Image 1 (spheres, one colour):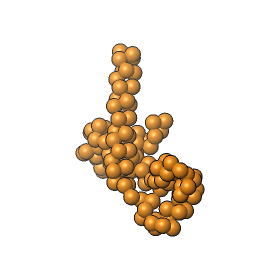
Image 2 (cartoon, one colour):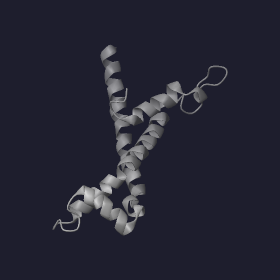
Image 3 (cartoon, one colour):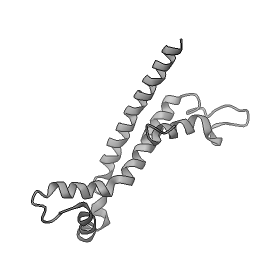
Image 4 (cartoon, one colour):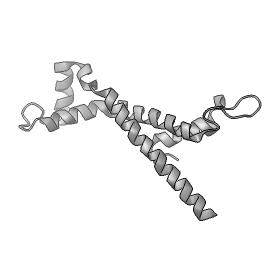
Amino acid sequence: GGYLGISPVIAHHLVEKTPEGIDDDGHRHPIFGNNPFLARIAGARIGGSFAAIASHPDECAKTFVQSDMTTYKWPNTRVAVFRGEVEGGMGKMWNGLGPRIARLSGAAFVCIFQELAMEWKTNQMND
């Protein structure tokens, strides 16, 4: 598992693996255990948030470099990271994190439909 990223792994964990998801009678969690689609949505949100937080400072530095057509102020990503932190503080490197989380969560959500299509195709071939 995990070839589509962390989102499907999280969804699978929510449905199948969490000790909190199974009660004393052996029943699954009332939300995720009975509805894998909701688990996939939660996995997309968690996976997209993780990806955005892990990559955002580097993305900001890359954007600084791309916006400087003369390459005078931001000649490369390394300089952009250090200069961005000095000039604007660490907060400058985290501007726009909310929209980035929304965008990457949406991209992870698209993988849900790819996974569902692959499951459907596999089931059709096995019938």
